[in-house]
Length: 400
Image (cartoon, rainbow, N blue to C red; front, side, top):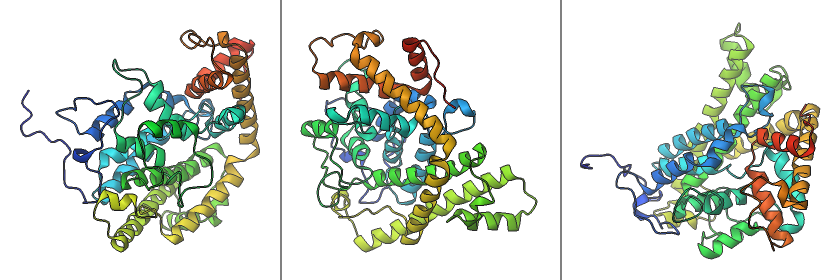
């Protein structure tokens, strides 16, 4: 095949963007593709992974069986990737890297969303805890088993750095106070991800795209569920102004179309705010290279101060009226029990685990056995967790 004249994605980028031609490479050296950049190849590996397919049956906010139209982890991930690409394109960054990080960022989530994570973290408290971001790293560096020459997906340094640090540095003066997960520290000893520095702008695009996506689609799903109402949203930051504008222009519009109009306007408003603020930050900091981004000492891709305050107020409203609504909490308690009891059953007897997960556990320490169980449990979809619960306990758990 002649590759003359093919487009490889080596288009014009800002000098401070991530450049696939200058990638720091993969932990296991491979011959690179003649038709794809390293970031495009990472994106493709992520999409073809088992962990990516599992996202279609993992909870975002509402258990999937409650309504066919609620977001799952997969649809959320796709929405995040679309927004991340748009942000990266507007700043002349590498769209493929931003997309890859967005697509992989939720790989480590348990069944039943954050509820499952909380339950698993409690069970793992004396064995290093459980963190979904660290679990994503374990999946792409160890648990996926697709290739003849290595475990994991052997993603390039820039994709792994973005996965681990998209929310900011993990150590040093700019880090959040929580301890660094053990899985991250172990991998970092093999492949230094510079945990004390800020990630690329592409990773920052993926991180803020996550905020934009779930703020918007949780409003949509909340209205669909009946736990939120348009009238009650009239006084909520960001949403109230949009609702008034929609009703003024379309006074006879039905609630379904009004909801979609609110969501699309909300996304547009937040995306455009991020672009304006990020352009201002770039102009003020004047980064010339990717190293300048790593050492900037602050996030560059960000909301304006006004939008950040409005976004915090919106999150506060959603926590009070949606995420901790009594009907959601009731389902959460059932989901917590499923995860906790499954963990106990597997931890007590590895023979309770399916074939392929029992083997090679002889002589394992308690900590190793617990992590093995956590790896298995975290990979489950909601539906598989319910099936396993039914198999082990001969009863179907109630999730309502």
